[in-house]
Length: 361
Image (tube, rainbow, N blue to C red; front, side):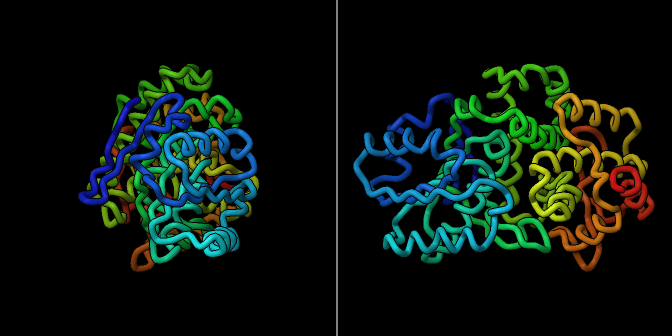
C-alpha cells in the first residue's frame, strides 16, 4: 500500500492506494470508529463491491449501516438526488457523529460529499473511489456538488473527506470506455506541471490500456501526488488550484450542451485538453509540435478531440458562466509548455475564436 497526505493542517487526510484495500477491516476502524455509517453508491457499483465493504466494516466492528443506492449516470447528479440522500439520513436519524462513505465514481463521490456537507451542517465522509477518474481526481480535494441545467457543478461546497481509500483492484471491472475517460485526468496532471510524466504516459499508453497493475498504480500515485500538492497550498481555489481545471472550461460547456448524457466527463476533458493546447498555440505560447504530441496521446488513449455536434456560439455562451469568470472576463488555463500550465486572462481574443472554429461546429 502507498500512502500520500493532503496537507491541510488540522484537516489533513491520507490517500491510501493499493490492491484489495476494500476488504481490509484494519483500515476501516481508525477512519470510522464506532459511528453509524451511510454508504452511498449506485446501481452499477453496488452489486460489485457493496457486500465486500459491508463485510469489512462488520468484521472491524459491528455498527449500524444504512445503504443508499442511486441510479447510475451524470444525468442523476442533481439536487433531487441530494434530497433523496438527505431524506434517508433523516429517516434513519443519523446523528452528527455519523460518517458518510462514498463508494463509486466521481458522480457518487461528488453527491455523497455534498450531502455530507449539508446534513446537520456537516458530517464526516470517506471516499472509496472505484473508477480511474475518481481515483486520480474527483475523490481528492474536497470539491463536492451537483449540476444545474445552466452549467456543470454550479451548486456545491468545499468539504474535505476524512480519508480516500483507493482499491486499484476495482479497476478490473471498469468498462474500457470509463478507463479511457479516466486517463484524461491523468494526462491533465502531467500537462499542468510534469513534462517527464507526460513523456512516461506517451511511452506507457498500451500498458495503461491493458490495465497493467504497476503502470496504473504509478499513474494514480503521481496524479494524486500532483493534486494533493496543489490543493495543499490552495484549498479553495483562490489561486493555483484553478490550474487543475485545465481543459475543463471547454469540457463543461460540452457536457452542459449535450445534457450530461452523450459524453463522459473524462471524454469531454480529453477534448478540452486539446482545445486548451490549440488556444495556447494560437496565442503564440506553444508550438505546433506540442499540440501534435497532445493530440497524438489523446487519440492513442481513444479520446475524442472535437465536439462537432455543438456550435461554437453555444459553447461560448456556456463558457461565460464558468466559475473562473471574473469581472465578466473569461479566464482559461492554458499552456506555456508541456508541463507548464498558467491561468490566463490576457489571452488574445482571436485565439479563442480560432479554437472554437477548429473544434466545434
